[in-house]
Image (tube, rainbow, N blue to C red; front, top):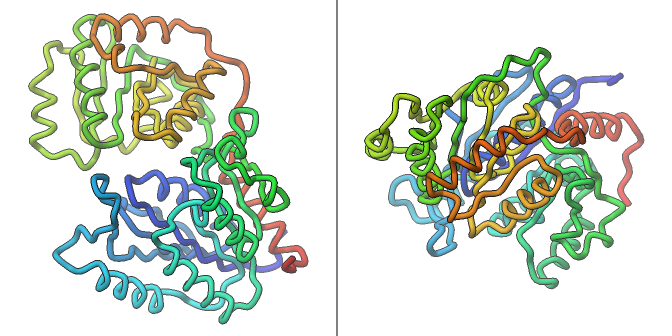
Length: 380
């Protein structure tokens, strides 16, 4: 039992999409049972943040990554990037409420290298104001492969700053060393906690003849949605719920609706109850983003996934899960309606695997941090 309510500073910066923030909020929900959490986050924001006891959050001036140039830019207004960095530093300084008992940083030092100065500056302030409190890292189980020299820099930062590296994944599906060759050098600080997913429902609804088709973002996602809409007339006994990105414009949604040729298709821009829809669905078709796949697995929903060719992390996760029968991959040639309709029927009729996957990562991270804070913390 906790002897007192704790205070935790949490840093999460998304450069593309909402996945990192969504996972972080699931962890924060668990931490809030015994700790007040101050979240510093950047990137695309949610329309509605959760209301939790002792939860405060600061959304930093936005910095995103340009997929064409691979450079950071400020999407809001015409401000120079240096001015945005200055604004962010001032916002952080005003927001923090010292002291803290621990710090959690999402992904760094295994990613977010462009934010290294900001993050290390925060670490330095933590050391100055709070002393040797534990700093935790929370990272997905698959990384984009990096050169050994870059991995060595990551190892050095872990040794200098990170108490525990929480890996959101199940080693029975994929191991961290498969995409990070120097894992052995930080093995004493690395813990698999399971995938981070909302808990499965207490009561399972009846499956319906409903297929949920969702995209992440970009042209690849639109290709998948278009293929599903064009396939729907061949499967009149199923209702297709087509979920565009919340960032889809009115024009983009209208273009999809113009493709509809059968009454069993509904196009929506966003689902607040996405997981609830999966619980009653016969099938999920998606780009295979890690958050979507965890929703699919926690609801035990048969799934087809069309991995984005430019994302090796996504493709490898789908490959590993496909090897266990939890998801079936789609290729570009499968997006022809005749082929896709066959894939859909075949996947729905497959026997779902009995193997369990660890998906309680948020609760496990919270539990382990609680144990560490209640114990005698000391640095190596």
